[in-house]
Image (cartoon, rainbow, N blue to C red):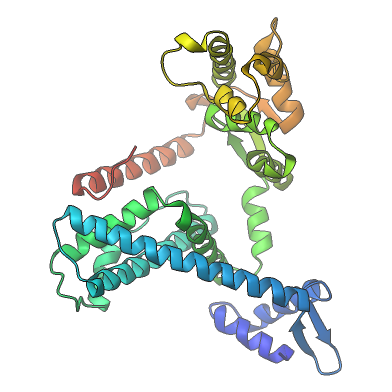
Length: 362
């Protein structure tokens, strides 16, 4: 493709941005991609993909096609299950049509979420009033009338299928759903600003994340895994590189200590144990290691005399997670009000969906 063809193609995608600005960022991207991912013939000002990149993209397209087919299959099964629950008998054609409608509503919902996220960042507004699934379904029915004669159950089947898909996605659908969500969010960013890298850096360069016990425990368990498989550790490492601060409270520290004590108790008398097996020792046992060695492994995080101090020092030294006290009184009044609004809005949407019988929250 010539440089002008590249410019034209990008402008068509980012039609909300000034053409001159888009061209500048396109040229900058071409320069960064040159030699490693693309080849540039300067005499004719033409570009093509490098051979290894062509092969990689071809494999990626085949992979995405496979994920797409799995999602379509899952949607048909969900539609059929919901219809059976409603005692509605569907023909194969009706099942196919409803699955396609669920897919359209899903993509509209993901695009809506991406746009709202970007707008909230742009306007420094923490509110995310995401459209109700039922509202988007009704809009889709208005634009694409039902030709399958399913009747009044269309809305219930579509909304219930989509709610079930989003709340408990099957393993086969998760990767494709994540790719779709990321794509729509990136598209929303590009339509607001062509300099996405600066926008992302701005969002995450000055923030603090408060971590709960449910995040710290998998982080510790990953010390049992190979370096490449440590997803939580890699995620937090990336957050720190962006400039985020990681914090825990004294309550989290005490919970970690109590959890480790429960694990040690289980290791000593597992035969007479009542209740759920504690997380850390279950992850330890899953690696095939003998439970007799669990006590030695726990010593990596803490000793006997000052266990909470040891855990605090380990988290700070290994992951940059610091201990700070957090009280609601110390938060700005505006922040407290906005957090409460988000909480009550989410609670109201949850109650509405539960009342409609569309989804069960756990």
